[in-house]
View 1 (cartoon, one colour):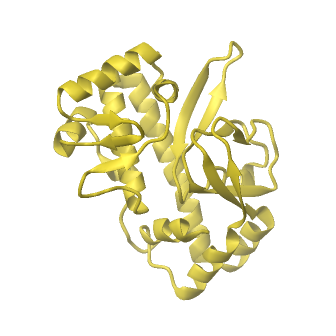
View 2 (cartoon, rainbow, N blue to C red):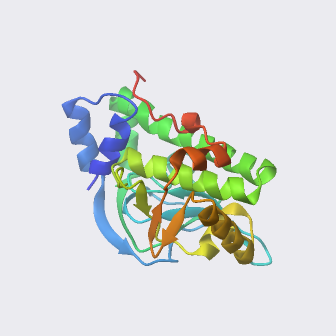
Length: 241
């Protein structure tokens, strides 16, 4: 169940066979989650961390008047709440943006890893540090980028992150994006109408198509130029950690 996690961590540093066996054993009790359902509730104190096996989830906060802001997306191979192991109380929620398959890792198992596997501990710590880097990038986008730049940047990021775990069609430069334009609006801090207009502009420029659940990028260089996309914050390179 945790093959995508193994693939993701191998992108950061080499793993030995013992580490791979541990990772393959930590994801348990797979279950399905319906789209729109909470995987982790704000204010909860989970006793486990949740690994995405399939689908997309979003970290979110809801204001008192009901407006929602999605603060980041998690993709297959990501723990949505690894930080709950040390934070204990969740200060935000995580919801399924599409039908998902998830598995859980009890916090007791994570504690054993921290006590006996220093290299794996560093790699799992690295994933939470990269989560923070993604949050910073999204904050810059909402604060300083135009709607067109933000939308383009989101697509570049998702293509890069899904590519790291083998979930893109590299030849066609396409991937599955099973979310609504309303979800995208909550990610980018825009209205649904503004999201639709921005999508049409990206299509008009020949940078992006979104048909059904499939996003295709006809002009990667052009899209990254519009997005000012620099993937350094994703740290998708292997080196000793």
